[in-house]
Length: 129
Image (cartoon, rainbow, N blue to C red; front, side, top):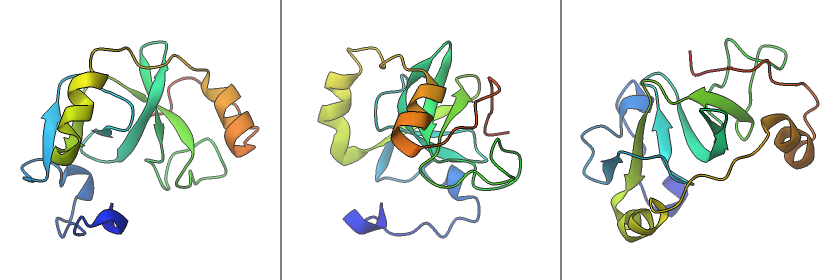
């Protein structure tokens, strides 16, 4: 986000930095490209699968499915429960249109394999802890 002009958050819990930031507004329904946060980690919404969102990035370290680290860009599950969604205010028109449509349903293992050449299969509900 810094590359397009957003200042780096100085809030120590950056996954919570969208809350109360005038550059972002909270949305009720996840849409492609929205920021999803559990309060501990943040991810970009890519799609949906069986009652969960599929996010790009999110948990860079700690519990994971790939040798102790999930690097930025990895597609992973994040459950809807407790998640909050945000969008930059400059995307308000996009959000108003995108919320009319459902997220694309995708298979996370197929996506990992085809897009990122990751062959480790998801165990089902890897989460943002």
